[in-house]
Length: 162
Image 1: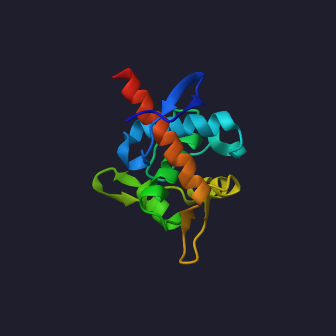
Image 2: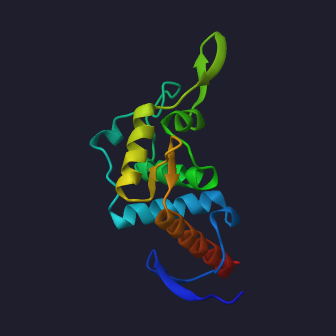
């Protein structure tokens, strides 16, 4: 495949691969690239309390990464791209985990609803997602276009480094 155009990403000019979607690239590299894009753009509204909060009642400590809000937003957008129609409740199930109960058996515990709600609201302000008439949130066409563009950049960077 011949690259079509060049796009500026993290101070390096990378050629974009045509026809590459989010499903075609490594998910961890894509989420890292999208989180870097969201942080670099400076448009994502990050709440003041992000350095004080745990991400669920099953967690013992707050997240150690200072950019966790950008990573959670990128992961949420990727999930909406792949499945769509997800709301706050389904995001809490996705980001839930095993609650350790000492000597009692462990059970599943949902993630923080406030964090899920604030991430979705911040992404709505960016016009990447919108409320679906069937319930939940879905990607906007411009959000899908942005995600495919970043996926093309990740694929081109992987091809260039290989």
